[in-house]
Length: 391
Ligand SMILES: Cc1ncc(COP(=O)(O)O)c(C=O)c1O
Image 1: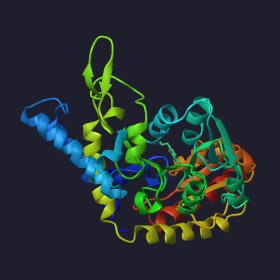
Image 2 (image 1 turned 90 degrees about the vertical axis):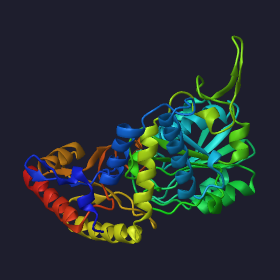
Image 3 (image 1 turned 30 degrees about the vertical axis):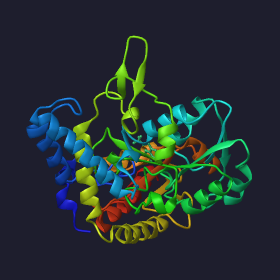
Image 4 (image 1 turned 45 degrees about the vertical axis):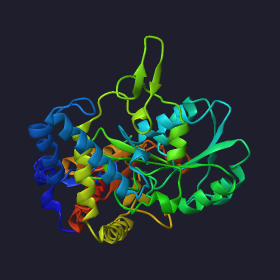
């Protein structure tokens, strides 16, 4: 995919070497179209939204709502008011944990979850039950089936694992949970940049994604919720924007999504997200391209002595986690950095999963539209250098 030149950040050198960016699962780089859209907003249209009657306020409001309908169509939600703008998946999960659950509830998650789809549930006081993974890093569906019981109020699962790249069988998960009358939240942080998402076809009840992982700006993300569920949920944060009437004693609230969008939203980020969705939607064949890169990268890493690949999920996206025998992942990452290669090292915000797979820290290389085979060649060469350094 010939898009690299559209990403200004990729043109730089790091430690005197051309940057090889293999950390897109943490956050992606941004194309010029997104950067320009944000600059343009601040240069021309900046104003607060939903309040003013002046031209700039009307323009800014129109752009925010335009971004909402772009996000709606991106995931094929039925209505724009099913799209709540928040800071990202973390905030979306916190919102649902606070507004949808009560302390006596149980929820079921998978062992593949990012901390963001685990810790907020724990903190909300509900009982969290966990369906495990097999040694390949695939969900144990049989465990999930056993865990969903009469007290289960929600199933919350990653669409795609940030640590192993596993694509969860989300349609089956929704079907199973619904057959027992249980709604489903899908964490789409790692899916939205790579897979087509259709929330009506999936029939999931909530779907969350973060702009910054899909070529958009940081600071904004989406919680999709079915209208009836959002309508019944209590507000979480409160203040301006989310109210209809206010007295000194009490307040009445707006309808969703505004009921969940207290305070001034990040309008420029919404504008950037819209540009990112438009950019991404124009990239036909992206998944196939990333899959061929993934296979190429796996082939290269398998040939390096001492590399242990973590998991081998049957369906996966371009995420490769591994260890190098005798070298701490942080040392691997530091030496690669000296070669201009950016990878993730550590627990990947998935400590329970790593523990289950027998590791505490790993190295992760993750792919995006702008990566090329040369990037993976550079990674393989860098890893051979690490081995030589520690020989
Ligand atoms: C699978 C998954 N879920 C949730 C998150 C949290 O997303 P954010 O930090 O944008 O809220 C991440 C970020 O790495 C992730 O990979």
